[in-house]
Length: 165
Image 1 (cartoon, one colour):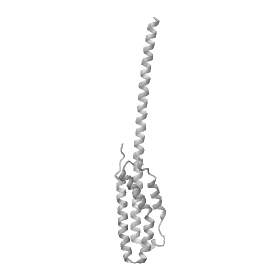
Image 2: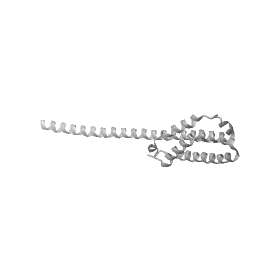
Image 3: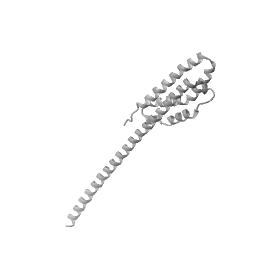
Image 4: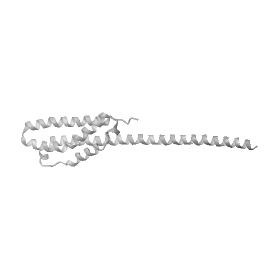
């Protein structure tokens, strides 16, 4: 009779061990799925935030170009806020290129950051060129258009980024 109890106890212990292992595997898979979902959401949030900053940065560049065209003379006397472009540039450069997983997007971030950082320089240079004469201003307008165009291309490269999983 003792042998029957021993065999029964062994079976109960074996079934309990298998159930414990199965439960551990199930719990581990659930934790993995939750962690993966969090990483996916973090990546989506990361890209969305970057795209929002890219839109702000592009509009800053565009507004600066328009300001230079319409109010160039006033810009020579320092009527321009340097900090906005520099702050947007710093925000863009905070994004880790390896997290972006998109070479065109990473290049767009750097290009747009440079365009924002140069906004105040363009505004000041345009104001000074207006005092030198018409030929200098025409050259500046062409350069401004190319600058704004490259900022648009950089922003579009960022906006085309999608979270890759």
